[in-house]
Image (tube, rainbow over all chains, first blue to last red; front, top):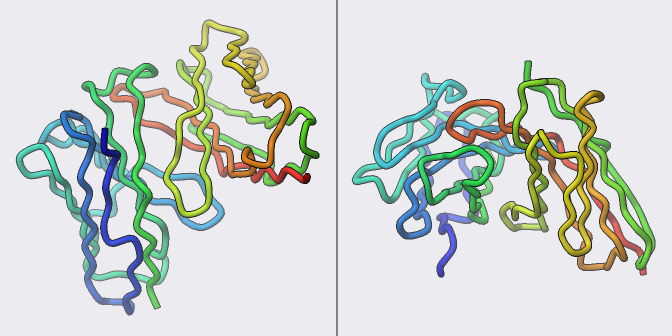
Length: 117
Length: 111
C-alpha cells in the first residue's frame, strides 16, 4: 500500500511570494489533515478535511493560508503572501475513517520543508 | 487549555531501557499517543492508550498513564541505535480526532 505522498519535498522562496504544496493521501482515506511543524516544535494542526468538506480550520491563518480538497482526494495548501515565520515543515496526514477518535490512525507523509528568506 | 510538555533530550546506552515522559493539562483527554519521527521523515504512530487504562504493553514498548497527575510515559526496553529519533506525545480531546502534540523528546542511543 502506497503511503501519503507530498510534493515538493523542499521549497525556498522570498517573503511576500506565493507557494503551494500538494498532498495525495492513501487511497480510500476519508480524512485528510495539514499540520505545520516549526523547527524544534511538535506539529500543529492547520486544517482537517473529511472527504471534500472542512471539519476544522480554526487554526488556519485565513488571511494568507488557504486549502482545498477537490473531489475528496488530493489536497493543496497555499500561502499567499509568505512571511518569514511561515518557515516550517508542512505535514499532510490521512486516516481511513471519519475521524473516530483514538482508533482512527493518522498516517503521515514525509512533509514539505519551506524556507522563507 | 491544551498544553502538552516533554523534556527536550534523552541519552541512553544501547541495551538499556529508555523512559520518555510527557505531561498534559486537559483532563478531558481521552486518547493519548506516542509518535516517532526520524530525520527527514513523517511521523510514525507507535502506540496509543485510552484514558481508562493505566498501562499498555506492545513488544518492547510500555505506556504508563497516571491520569490523576496527567502524566504519560513511554518505556522502550533494550533500546537499540535504530530507536534514535524524536518522540512526540499527543492528546486527542476534540471530536474529529484532532491531535495536540508536545514539543518532542530527542532520544540518542549510544553504542
